[in-house]
Length: 65
Image 1 (tube, rainbow, N blue to C red):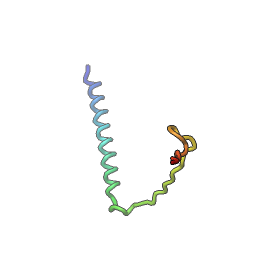
Image 2: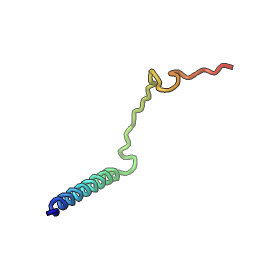
Image 3: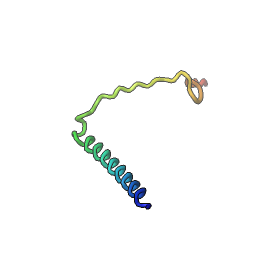
Image 4: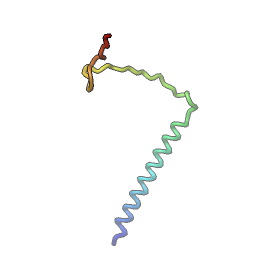
């Protein structure tokens, strides 16, 4: 009586494990398909100063002697 739910659970866990293994394998193959630096992209990085800081002052304090 209890064999059908256990079989369903075992098949579900097995399918999930196979899917995770397949995804990890594909990402490994994709990441090692080209030699290092062959797919290097230029990364555009821009930092924006927030208008209102969460902590402290929005502008740095000036120390006066």
